[in-house]
Image (tube, rainbow, N blue to C red; front, side, top):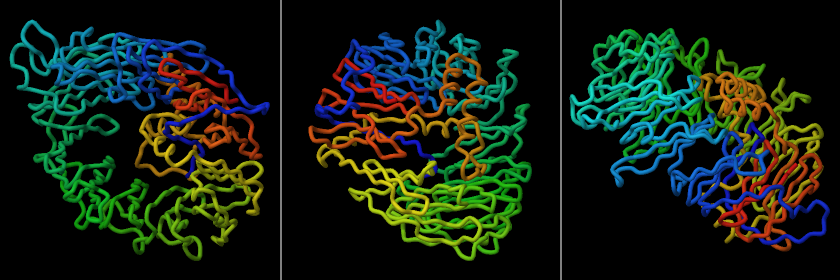
Length: 619
């Protein structure tokens, strides 16, 4: 809605396109030969195309005319064995398991093509977990070490620049207990140089700088942990079998600070440590386990940091699932998926004169110079965050949208909302609203992207691209028919094919940001810059590569790629966003290829056959 960078997953079927047009491309830029049969391919956040095949694991960089690596030590690699660590160049490959009596884990840097960790080579019989910590750039592994004295439960710490093992921590001395008597029960937590290990017996704190066990606390079975900014207060969460959560608080010296653990109804989804206390959102599912049913709801609480007691006599009623949750200077602002926005002080008093009624599905809550804008499926408004009242005469109502996309027109000082078959323009100052344009996209599509261009307003969907003048009149509308319904059914087969990595910019920025902090309505350039700086600060060749990639603007920013049925089959066309003109057609000589588009580098990767990938320059 707010970001014009498209991510899709499809398998596409082509027949040979025969054209005399000068823009038709039949010769690939590069050809890559894979020794084993290709199982699948995936374009990653880093721009590296990864290929899992029957004999191993290979990678392609957009600027390289050959494979940058092809590892065959792992045998056949399957898609479900891969865990990609967001906003990093790392993938964890998990093979084996109970059927083979041991599980093998490999951590691989796919930017430089280097294996950083492998269980057997590093002395592990079985690896239960492998966690990556950023910005420390450390890998922490828990599992069973091979040992002359039977088995030994251990935690290992590895440097992810060199792959070197830095520390081995034994929660229990090897040989003292048999396997299974003490186990790591949840996610390990790392804060600065301190590593917190939750076990079935106690919580262990280890200092990797001094290579010493600092303390242990009589808190067991924790599932996950977090800490305040100073690292002096640690909070441990235990997910119970009933679906509820127990919370414990431990000091940096290992003292259990709360006499009793605090039990919270449901699963904790938001947790914010504030000077006034601990703000918590928990989601309570219905008996069927869904948090989206009419009977499911979220609960908002404020706990005392001193003893864990509930500070509010009366918690705000949500009557639904909390979709937005933001901590502000004077209180907590939240929005409900089924409709409604409210704000409550840190002491539990409602700050709005009355709860704000909204339509369902709040797509956007963001700050503007005038107040906070919200956009739902059926209404929009800018409200005063002190009172909850509209800064305009009345909220903007429109018919229930089939799809919502919005943008801000700075030159004309207005907000623009596409509801599926019209564009509503809202004057920023007065709130006056008018229907700017009515339109119809073919195949009953609705715009999934809306942006302001230098020469007009651009609306796009999978098969349609339309440019409006600023007064709402139509400049052009180009439509390219989709593949037949039977073919389209096959397209949704679940394998990654057309994949733009551009949208991962915001994901990368959020990886290091406070998810409970409300943002500005249009700040995506800032997010890209933040992501770039975050990568650069980590200080390795791979993160430096990612930093440079995210600094660059998309190579195909002025183009839309559409899969369409042509006279001679199905093909991919490149359309100029500003003119609607067809600029290029990629001609492929295979009826059933998979392909992926890298918008940053301007490259199309096409699986010609079971052993060959071709690349095409889209620029």
